[in-house]
Figure 1 (tube, rainbow, N blue to C red):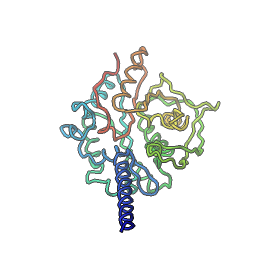
Figure 2 (figure 1 turned 90 degrees about the vertical axis):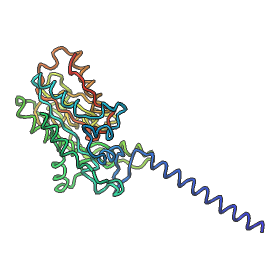
Figure 3 (figure 1 turned 120 degrees about the vertical axis):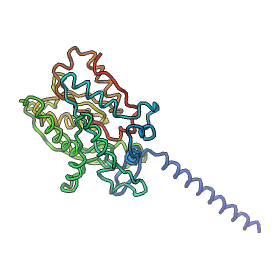
Figure 4 (figure 1 turned 135 degrees about the vertical axis):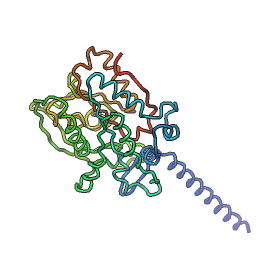
Length: 328
């Protein structure tokens, strides 16, 4: 009788312990900023939320946006005001939202995480911006078509950013928009593909280690082997979040000489000006631009184009869209 009682207690203990670990695991999964998809693809939970958010402008922004200030949740006023301020200086704004990785590779996203909305509002929103005079470069169809025809991933599997191939595709497409707006460059650059290993930010967020991801990048150098440097006197400014810095800034951005600005320097035959932030490309990037103009007299006199590039999820997930001046 005593043995049976001990056996029952032991079983009960194992059940309780098992339940504890199951609850702990479920809680950890729920609190994780990363969603594990099929075939080793990882996705940022914020991006999935954005794709499932539905309309995120006008009155709907109050519910779709994440910014603490309700009046700063709609991205439209800030984008339109920025475009108008640049136009008054004779500068063209080219808005380049980076297509969500989870949208381009939605087949790897768990079905339970794909709602009815799933990015369907981007067409409507880009039309709204264009109707207000904003020039929008939508890379989605370019990415979708190349995804079908090329066996080269446009995004890193274990990182939030586009791949070395994806950034070259984006740069080529952007360059076609910019070339008619500036004088032909005369600087010659060389290109060379090589492979690197990275430890992606999504893998690091999971905190469970794992191997590194191997990706190809296209390095750009001049005749003397020097990589392009940011040139404040360039007629072209590349402004944005870490999509502007990845493969360009080194360190946690993985490499130098292979980022968006480097690829644009190659395509446009001349270096570009770069202002990138490791945070939100919505307001912080424009604050950095304001400070640059504040300490650089006549900053806008030679500018022709501003390429504003940031993750599309920023439309709902940023800390706020403030209307800002572009100079003191």
